[in-house]
Image (cartoon, rainbow, N blue to C red; front, side, top):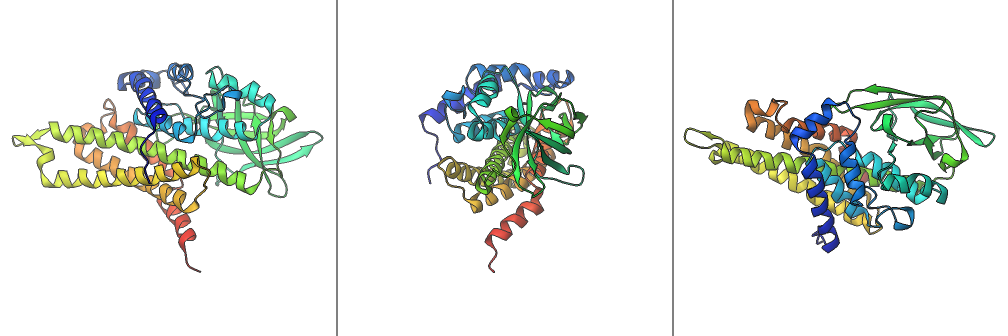
Length: 370
């Protein structure tokens, strides 16, 4: 298969790299982090102005009308610059489901302002855990009452709506929009591996009005749930690819410039072998991630391709960034040097995908011979 970009994709990749790379410099990222903002508001506005924030949203809904590949290119560019934008949770896990399954009123009220940069959408992770039990919904007249909790929600404090997956008493999933400032909703800020702020959302009898019901519990088909989960997984793989690519680029540049014993350390065999291994890992992530994205963009939900991409993306970037840290020596752990952002992002992203063991287990289940 040929995964080279067509003319439109090349334009999107170049534009995204220019805007994000131009603003998300290491010095400015440090300034944004010091402001304790949930995301980079200036960069968010610039992406919206260029039509990149809602790039995969149809033009009739206020977006740019491009496709999933273009969305992945913007996500990868953001990851390469370590920009705090959370486009996976916002653009892919929130805006796209509202675009696919929402009403015309929701498109006008939520998607058009989002694409214009005037509002913020985000999403809660669908996978429950001990500390994040998920959400249960019950019908009270025409209102869905939701109870439960979920952690690791980015942009929650700035969001106009948070898209959640909630199950009814029969375990059937629905898509509901939550106002984080509404009665019955409580946000608690917490730290994360990548040092970016996320929130826990607790709902206690929170009432979801009909205008915020995207798909009522019991009416979301299994294939629709699979499409949402697959799109998010592939988007996370792209973010992992961006972080790994930039960590490798920084490392290759460093070992070509850093000298010991009168020669560049990259000429030493032990160092060059480590860089070569990192290059192979990055290529593995690139090939598998783009294959999964290419198939998905063409309407093919290939579970095997997605599982392979998820395993590579959950494992290889960790190795790449660990190698980068080792080869940079003491400079690698200096918080004034940008490499730590990619190291932490790779670990955060790998866990968001499920981690090495879980992704390998999923892959094993798919290829097992019964």
